[in-house]
Length: 388
Length: 165
Image (cartoon, rainbow over all chains, first blue to last red; front, top):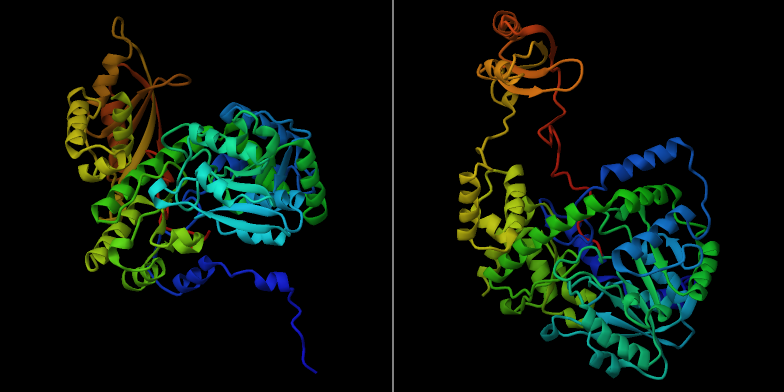
């Protein structure tokens, strides 16, 4: 008897991540310098680690409240107020999650009805589109343009909105382009958001890593707090990717619904990570500032190196990615990345895996030691010279 | 301007050997500006020298021996501890001298080829000074971290996956 597939149609229809394919290729090679890593090169600051040792010794190994330890939620609330001027009630408007990724998933599942459309800005983080689909929504992508430095504009939202549009996912500063939106630009977006009565999922995981302007949090814009779920976490600025800890804040009704789903599907975020995060919130600022400064120097270095070798690269305002154009070489993003890996053992991520408008660009993370960056730039220069 | 001075100092503090062209790129300024900044800092003696941190044990078999010596002294009228400190820090065997609060007065770091050699310096030179009342000598057995640098730290050991979203 013919065995039918046990895999669900919906799961089966999800596109495999382009990053995954490229990872498999790079993993087989030796002496690879990777600019493909979406995480800090710093190890978690020692005081956070040491604090978690202490918590373990004290026997903090059980579950916490579903929404996360109240101490931590209070610290997050204080931190957001102090850093970005947004005020959330720790009891009712904050949920601690397993990374910002889970916060995105919860926010979508808590708000999207079948058939409703969610706008996803591309080039963007690879998880948004599948997460919208899994939540039963219909992802509608917006392609930002290189001539706008990949910044989202009100015009682009207007063109994508339909009567079925429920929400928009913003990522500011952006992965993979590093584009950071100013307060004025966000205010212009807010007008359109209000006009079409949209919910905003504002992914601000890179907020602290903003190099030119001071970061403006979307809910800090007038009228936006009641229609925004702010998503952030500890992975990037606090160098805690492996601890898997994020959070969401927003209107009580939405956060309570998120906690309801969270309690059935996850119970709570890892207890030991919550203790480390407590220390990060209380005493982490000097470490974050130190790392931020170091990323900024390396950004300056990589951007001027790309421009010198003839790969046009605008100055990214945030995150730790440069997104140079590789069109001068006459290669597609995928060809460029594959040939570069084969010839020079440097791994970069083809821009098109982040959305079609990323074609012609590659994502290069500068969260890599200066020594490695220096060598990577030497190798890339050699590679580009052969082709231009 | 002062912000740039601090930034350049923090860069060369960890690597005095960093080329001006690289410093220029990191700070987003020109190479001329880098040279100008460095010259300015040298002139006002904010930069006192460019020394190299060496693990001598990797080059010659004979390891250097270092002792931290706690010294109690008799301060002199008018000059306090400064005069006796100078008598001590002028010796080339002495690598560092600090005035301390607490149970003793001067902390003196002494380097030599052998324990015997250091012992001889302490008994014949240091203890023999008139104003030195007593010395307690501690030999360094192992260096874990020196001048902010963790020895045997494998910083190239990157534990991250090659590609991640």
